[in-house]
Length: 81
Image 1: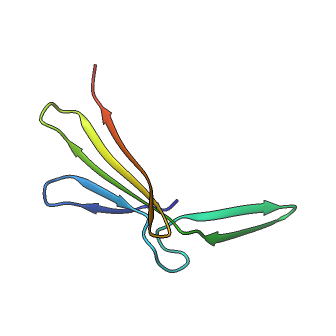
Image 2 (image 1 turned 60 degrees about the vertical axis):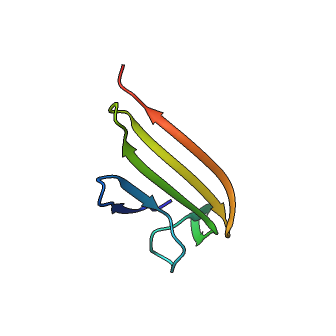
């Protein structure tokens, strides 16, 4: 997975694995067989929207799509102890 970073005006960070051409940001499947290795882009796309809330916790909204079908939505929170 190669992610493309974008800093938002609110100071948050968005990481994307968009559709696109070979070699750019996106999801790849790499297979090694004997002494050969091959790779190809796969139709999985992820988006991570990161920001810090009012209490200083890092929050992330994570979405995963397969082709254009939403497959997974997660919300993470990381807080200091």
